Image (cartoon, rainbow, N blue to C red; front, side, top):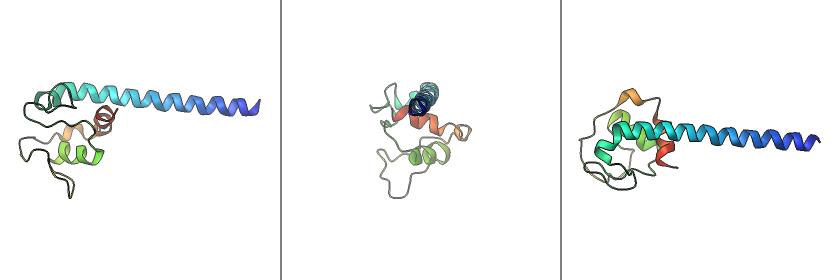
Length: 103
C-alpha cells in the first residue's frame, strides 16, 4: 500500500510538471503570435518575411536576442542584420517563449 501511495504521488508530480510546461508553452505561443509573428512569420519552423525560423532556439540565444539584441559567443547568425529591436519588457517570459519554440 505504501508503494502505491508513493507511485501515486510521483505520478501526480509528473502530471503537474507536464501541465506547467503546457501553460508555459501556451503563454509563449501567445507572445509569439502577438510580437514575433510580424517578422518571423506564423510558423516558427519556417523563415519569416524578415526574421529566420527560430523553432528549437536555445534559451541563451532567446535571452540575448530578445533582451539585448546580441548573439551568444561563437554563434553564427542565420541572418546577419540588426533589424530586431530589444524587448526588455519580456525578460520574465523568455522561458515561456523557449517552451513554445521547443515543444
